[in-house]
Length: 310
Image 1 (cartoon, helix red, strand yellow):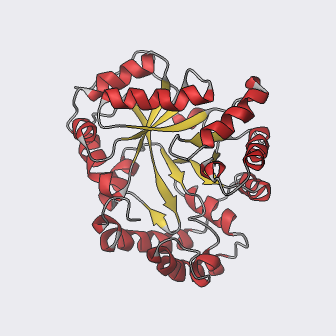
Image 2: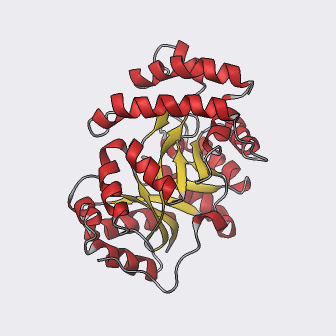
């Protein structure tokens, strides 16, 4: 059963900035804690929204220290929330908010996985009025649904029946020149319905030549193989900077509202911010080449992948 609120939240296109700072590296304990706090301050001063999770080691503790310096500057947050039931989801919401000293998150990224809650979501079950209650309580102002190749069927089944309407405000997935982690069929339906989308992992883990040529730079073999195919396209584009290329690629699609990129280096943050100023789409022929690759990759690799193998 689908329920909608008379006090609907703002659609994503009204206030979502083009670049959102990903905080994954703030949880990297190989980097001194104070250095990570310093980077959090740099990102705060940039004016970016943040994307975070209690899954990122002690990233929330880093953010808490940075936020406590000046609570008037706490950025809006997209936070990953999940569980196999509404009770588990509620617990996870609090496990993310309480370490940050917050009572509400701007956007909750629904990470439903493949369990009971995902099945309920797919069939239009009782999770929907529960999501609405969570929103009306102010714990989560808006929801976006996380999608992977192995969860695309859940989103597709629900979306075909319009169950998420009025509850889910957009869809979030890995999207860059080397990765497009939704099925071909789901992508086409999202675009047909003009559903708002957020691109995760802006630069696919690093410059394409590094992923192609440096042993171990690509964390999985498939990324290195894709870099071999994409590098010549990047070179023909005339774009000198991989970050700019990736940002322009994402925003060559009208339903992409933002891209989320993580870094621990201030200069990389500046690169992200600069790339999202006055964004120009890539030439159509360049975009079409990558689209064709991604359709093939989805059929050949992504949709056959086991959970969390990519």
